Length: 364
Ligand SMILES: NC(=O)c1ccc[n+]([C@@H]2O[C@H](COP(=O)([O-])OP(=O)(O)OC[C@H]3O[C@@H](n4cnc5c(N)ncnc54)[C@H](O)[C@@H]3O)[C@@H](O)[C@H]2O)c1
Image (cartoon, rainbow, N blue to C red; front, side, top):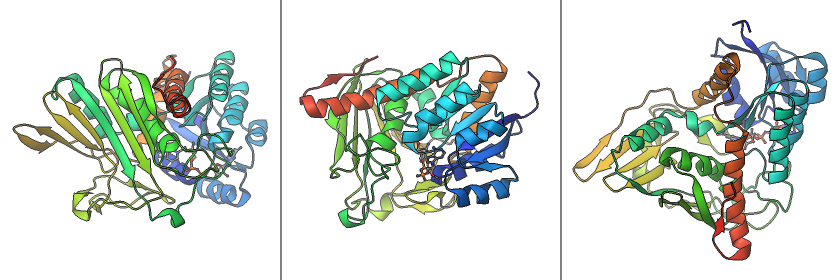
C-alpha cells in the first residue's frame, strides 16, 4: 500500500460531523473524498465547503466513489445499513458510538465487516482524550492504589418542559433511547472507558434506562468490575442542575454543548464541566475530560496533572489516525467491534435488571 492519503467518505453530517471533519482536515494521511446525508441542503453546503461531491445516500455515493474508509456519523438507527453498505463495497468502517442499541444489529455489523475482510473501528472517542489516556497510565502505575470506585453523574437541564428527546430516527420508539446525555447516548462512553482505565471488565450491573418515546426518568446504573471495583452512573436531563457556578473549571479544550456540538473557548470558565471521579485506596483522580483538566487528590494534598493541550475535537482525528495506522500496518483496528459489543452488553444488562429487579451478569 502506498503512503498517499487514504480516501475517506463522511456518512452523516449532523452535529458531531463538524468536529470530525475539522479534525480529519488536519490529518495528512487522509483526504475526504465524499460526504453523505439525506438532508440535501446540508449535504450541498458541506460538499461545497470541502470541494468534494455530496450524496443523499450511501448507496448513491458508493456507485461513484471508492472510499478506503467510511466514517459512519449518522443517526444510530442507520449505523447498521450504512456499515453493511460500506463493508460490502470493500471499505473499512469507523462507526460512532453506540454501535446500535440492540445486539442483533451490532452482531450483524461485525459479521459484515468480517465477511468482507475489512476493519471495523468502534468510535469510543473518549479513549483518545488526553485526560483519559493519562488517567489510565496513572492508575496502572499505582499512584492512587487499587481502584475501589469510579463514578459519573450528569444531572442537568432546564427543566422537564424544555427537555427534548433524541428523535426516533436515532432510536425507534420503544427501544432504549434518551435525550443525548443519558445512559444510551452518553453512558455508553463510560461503559467502555471505565473498564478500560480500571483495567477490569464489568461483571454485573443493576439500574434503569429510558426508552425512546416514553417518559424520561432518572437513569442510573451500579456495577461491579471483575477486580471488585464498583462503578456508578446517574443521569437526568429533564431537571435543573444544582451545581454551583464556582464548582466549575477553566477549560483547556472545547466542550460538548447539548444541541450545538463542540463549542466554547479554551481558557473559558465552564460552570458545569462533565467529570469522572476515580477513587483508589491511596488517592483519587478527578478527570474533566472535555475541559481537559485533571487533578490528583492524595491525603497530602491536591495537585493538577498537566496533559497535552490537544483535547476535543482533535481526539476524533487521533481516533481515525489509529485506524489508518492499523490498516497501513495490516493490523486489526485498535478498538474493534468486540469492544463496541461489550459496551452494549453492559448497557443491555442494566436494562434487563430493571425488568428482573435483580443484578444481571454482563454477557461476554
Ligand atoms: N463521540 C461523541 O462524542 C459523540 C457526540 C455526539 C454524537 N455522537 C454520535 O454521533 C452520531 C451522530 O450524532 P449527531 O449528534 O451528529 O446526530 P444528528 O441528529 O445531529 O445528526 C445525524 C445525521 O445523520 C443523518 N442521517 C440520517 N440517516 C442517514 C443515512 N441513512 N445516511 C447518512 N446520514 C443519515 C441525518 O440527516 C443527520 O444529519 C450518533 O451515533 C451519536 O451517538 C458521538
